[in-house]
Length: 257
Image (cartoon, rainbow, N blue to C red; front, side, top):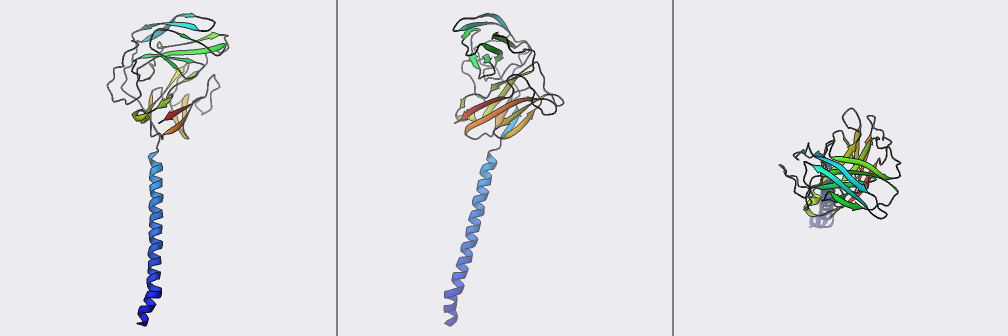
């Protein structure tokens, strides 16, 4: 009887306490592992987009520029490329796509582009001097990268050396919703420069993750969290130094909902 009282008073509470401590530790460990797994899901990756038609013979040229007090009119000659149609593709691209079809990306001073589905349109400018890049774009906003598919010019006071090396930002842009958030297109335009494993490169910083790009191509960004995404593109030399040239670096914020 005495042993039973001792067991009830000391041994059993002690055992219950030990079990409670062990359970608490296991629960904490499980919780920590769950947190780590959640963080691992946010793994931003960059991979090359392949399969788009090349449009090697497509060309874009300025037909006329009519400067006005409020708006200026731009007209283009386009050959071997159709605006307003859906781009034919042989791969499961899963990228945001314009229902209006192929178009022109029109970029002023490396700001966000405006999309134009006709070969003539009007623009107004906020500054007196404006560097303009226009290039042909597929319906899913991937640029056509050949030497005849773009124009670089400036209107107003000529202040920029157009022979400089240029990196222009194109995509991603704006707000993405639903399945469009799963893959974003990273695309940029190079003028008067090339990138390679031994020469200039593009350094892309997406959130806090850095990628070094040595091939001018479109890329998928995958693994992004919802919310505000910060992107920076830098044209760098073979030693990793920022090249001193207009509009370098480029920074953007996009929203994933």
